[in-house]
Image 1 (cartoon, rainbow, N blue to C red):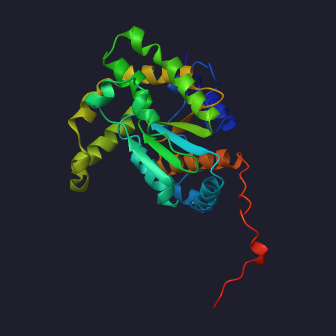
Image 2: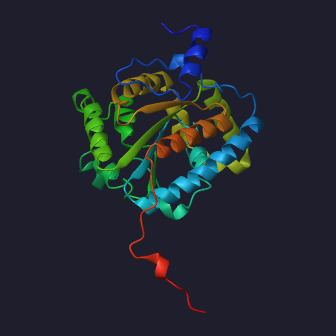
Image 3: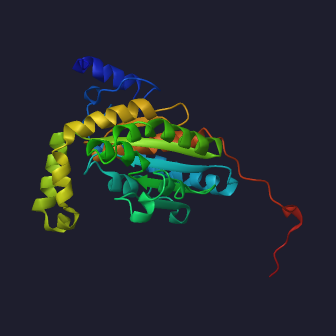
Length: 281
């Protein structure tokens, strides 16, 4: 049974980052996508976001210099949830040379001939770099499940396979952060309609977005199971209220900065004695 509205707000204030505890049952009805915490409008977040972007740039420099870890950011959510916008607004201030973005669309014939994690594994960032998955290997327990593309006995095994895969990545120095960008069905409708009415957004319109909307309830169920089964101690899921783009951007940036700070990274010592170096005229 969904929580009462006042209990939902209290729950979210206690866990503002909405980190899903391993094994917890998840009802997305308990996470209002319009939630904005202590903020009422975009202008209230600008100063905070500017400070966070500065910190993120500094942390990226440390990540690259130390080269002991990599950061993998996974973005999932329904069509129009803002995956592209999150990448643009959250990561816009970092050094693009140290960040790669991978889009996971319909698998190619070559990818289908291999295990479902192959295309994800080869895109994992090397140490010192940031990698962003715009959609990811989780499509194989989402769209594959919703549309019965493989038998249940196949996709039902993939939750544990994904957990094992991500644990291996973490044990080898990759920080895995997973964000489910949570929008309401009404908000998706507004965003789809704006794409249709605005000529500058016509290029974004795809018939598949409209078709997939008919499966909304099926996707919500698939997401709830995914969040329950694949939020682990080593790679937890964050449920991000995403109806308000500015709040989405703030919370995702906060989460990334906080996680990178926990690595307690240090600039490496020089390989030579710099005290005796002089620069000629």
